[in-house]
Length: 184
Image (tube, rainbow, N blue to C red; front, side, top):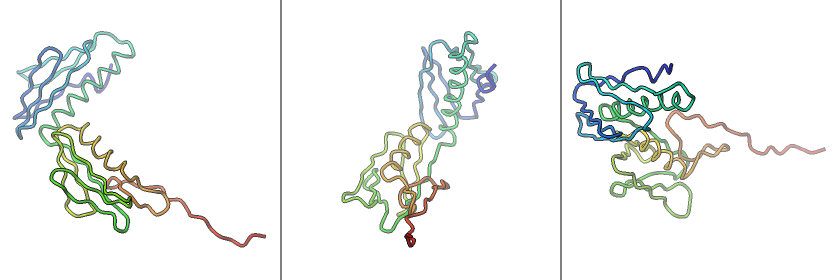
């Protein structure tokens, strides 16, 4: 039995959940709304008395076991997203490397001839506490992570000097540069 899949998703106060024809709609106290459709072989039920969402699988084959835990995790991520939200922090390192806002978009100056502009998707917001810190926030965990990965991919940290865009707390493996020794 899936240890994750068999656990019910507990709904905190203020979260509204509606099941409708293979789709789940989750609305939070902050006004965030998320929806997702699950695989037809999974059975998702809403218990109004205990305020939980339960996921059941039809059989014990490998594909069903994988979908069982996945479906439960995705629904739990939606509930956490509409209550607390998700946040990714990025740091920019390098001389002259910085970010600025242009409306809702973030514009990066990271050593290329042209500035790189990234427009966040709906439901994702970007804050810049200072020119070298980017904070990506939103209710949808997948969208927040994807947008943060796209911003990071515009200039990944290089291994020699460590310049580039990285996640906060990410360690970059550094390499030693060329060493000139007297050849014999």
